[in-house]
Amino acid sequence: MSTIPEIRALPVPDGLEGERVDAAIVRMFGFSRTKAAELAAAGKVQLDGAAAGKSDRVTGGAWLEVEMPAPPAPVRIVAEPVEGMEIIHDDDDIVVIVKPVGVAAHPSPGWTGPTVIGGLAAAGYRISTSGAAERQGIVHRLDVGTSGLMVVAKSERAYSHLKHQFRERITDKRYHALVQGHPDPMSGTIDAPIGRHPNHDYKWAVIADGKASVTHYDLIEAFRAASLLDIKLETGRTHQIRVHMSAHRHPCVGDMTYGADPTLAKRLKLTRQWLHAVRLGFEHPSDGRWVEFESEYPEDLRYALETVRAESA
Image (cartoon, rainbow, N blue to C red; front, top):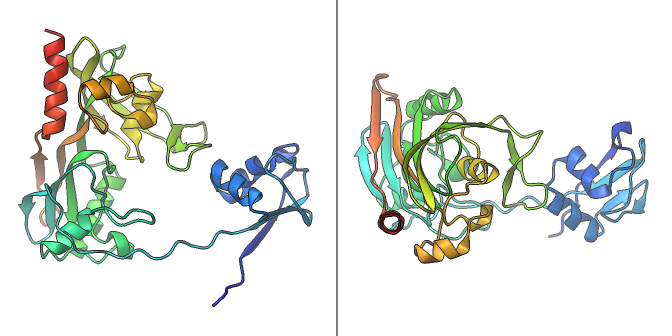
């Protein structure tokens, strides 16, 4: 059964006079630069009724029409065991886990691998039904390539209480990161807005009109080629630590997406970024008492750390 495509049309603001079509689409419709270019290449963009290429220039007052892409197919939760996912606390309101690398927090379009939600379902856990259907109970996330502590809400009370804490920055989220080089100063704060990368849908970047993002870091140990940092997040943007450390010219070791040295990662036998959520503290939703949980480094991160330490001896 065919559907009629949705067409959106807006007049070009005078302030965008002379901008490229793809740049205007980004500003006016909220797409990434890559998606805007794809729409133009597919013939789904018109300027005053005529087909427009991505590099054409717009004029103030002209009507820019875009055929909107079809919404992604709904994702479904597949209950399947997650190897290496450790349950370290479980009560009526919450379950606290150590998420292994290679596992997403919840299903999403294009992801066919294991998820925290699917793993909990396979283990017989019933979690909160609040939130979007595919991410029920999820109040915060870790990247697929990042391991460590997560809390998942089991009750509706817990979901609301925990979401409030993460939103109002009441929680204490601590990470350890092995980064390339030696940050100067050794302890400091990176305060730089983060938004979607203008040229890559899957990446994020420090950009002027991004969301406020604040990362605090302290040196734990310095090695010849890298530094081990304790990192506290004041905000919780996607890829925040990875983006901020890369922008600070000290990417997480093994994080080739954000500019890490592949030769160093190969020497340390790393296939992902050296980043682990080591501590998580929050007010328990049942009675408001402060609770904290800690997690040790997984085997691949321990090996890499021991190797750089030995090389520096």
